Image 1 (cartoon, rainbow, N blue to C red):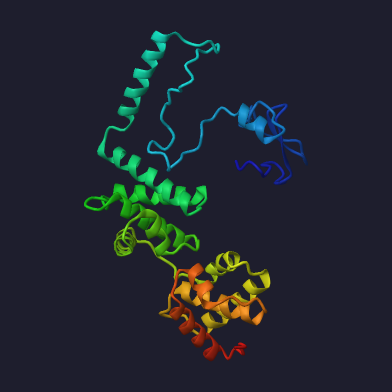
Image 2 (image 1 turned 180 degrees about the horizontal axis):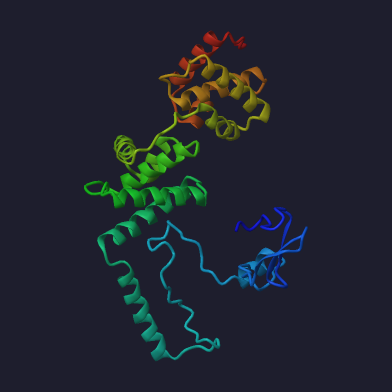
Length: 302
């Protein structure tokens, strides 16, 4: 019997009566099922705070924690269940328990690797201003690399940096390889080599970097208005449509578009100012500027 369709009259107007624990057809009154179980909570909550306090489930899985947040923790409050401070002898015992509990929770080489790597991942991601969901995605990718044995023989720091760069590319977050190399302290070439290795062995389909993703950041750092951002996006979309960005670095093209948009909208910035914000050279700005101006037929005042 399909619950939702009355087996007597074929009507789909069905009601679940939790007070009587029955499923009833509203047309003919036939009881399709009785003694149904209410799978909802037996308590009520009127806001998020009440819901969190009354819920009896644990915290969600956190890939940023070596044990995924599922291990037992011995707190450091040193009070008993009634809130009374425990004796000095009990405090010493609890201290030893905490110490051995911590050692036992990080016993294997994989767990030690994760403890070091996830701490480094959190440091770099925090310095890059990345949100929690990006950290979680990066931690999950690092765990997959560890499970496949791709970490052996490589620096943990370089793999972490490469994973963060990969996740930023996947989520269209404008963070350059130079920025990640500077914060992580790992050579740019080493991160790039590890990134290509991970992409191949994990079968990651990496989308091309869209230069429009860098426009809001560059414009904001330069103190430019929303009109300039919109104009820069229009220039880049026109350039992408005509295939002018193929083989060019996305940051250089985005920086040149922001420079042109600033001039056109009367908010001129020097090429040096734009180059410093974008992390490229003035020569790159000039070359991309000439290409966009000539190929798109832009009338940019000198």
